[in-house]
View 1 (cartoon, rainbow, N blue to C red):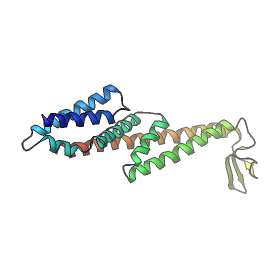
View 2 (cartoon, rainbow, N blue to C red; view 1 turned 60 degrees about the vertical axis):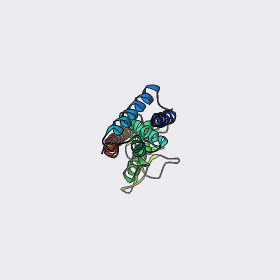
View 3 (tube, rainbow, N blue to C red; view 1 turned 180 degrees about the horizontal axis):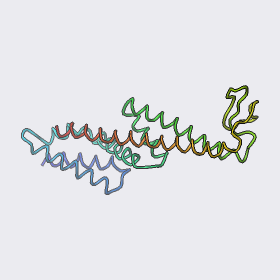
View 4 (cartoon, rainbow, N blue to C red; view 1 turned 90 degrees about the vertical axis):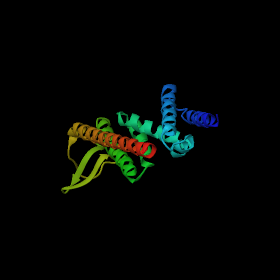
Length: 197
């Protein structure tokens, strides 16, 4: 009876820490962990205590599940906000995650900046563009006052900046999604190895 209470207490604590998830997601995780504990306890030399020890504290396990769900949801998303949340969560897990997060920040900043300046060109045509003087680039984007020199692209700046900015944002999205999917697969394998090995 004590083992039942121990498992029930662990599952209740896990359920409480999984509150931000939907009820269906939370109950699926609790059922999966209950089955894992039961299966581990039935193995030769296995026990409920050893299964719970391998799983670790319920709060930590819930955090791992929450991280995993955010990363999986972000890996299927096109939302820059959700992708960057997933990349930020990935950054807490290692150096490669930090790299992905900073590449995402830089990529979205450059791409978004180009798109924004393309939208600014019709409003501020004399202040937005690419300027050269004596064959040297002296400024680009939207600047007040415009740099001394010749504006190179004129109204061609709009389609070029829109296209380049959109491509940079799409490439950034693809990189982040690929990194999140790879991380999700690695985390799944590590969890399986740690808990079923």
